[in-house]
Amino acid sequence: MLGFAETARRARIAKRLTLRDLAEQLDLSVIYVSDMENGRRVPPSAEKAREWAKALDLDPDEFAMLALRNKKVIELPIEGQPERKKDVAAMLARSWDSLSEAQQNQLAEALSKIMEGKA
Image (cartoon, rainbow, N blue to C red; front, side):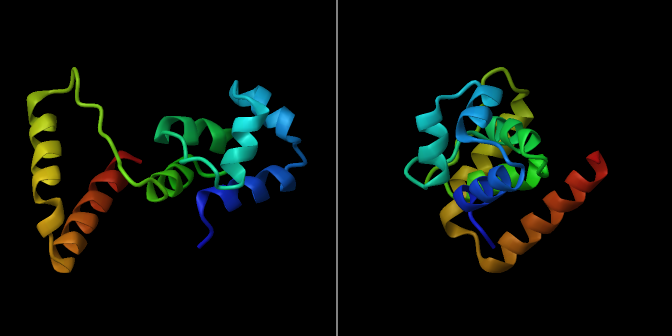
């Protein structure tokens, strides 16, 4: 599986966009887009990755997942969220280091089913 940077670069070239064209569509600097495509920067937020994907005719959710996989730390915005959502985020963060492979698989399966229901 290709990473965020390589996928972004290949998709931009396939779409025949220059760095400048893409940067203007995303309201970013050419240097930032170039650095991102060459892996010299941490991938953007999931939200920005979805915008990027739309500009390149890629699946926004898959591209956002690529961006998140390439990050060293993933932050969840919890300000203004319902208390239960905050609780779920805190439970996951608290148990992160101790999750067994079986538990990771169970969580992934459960979340996949939840996300399929949203589609």
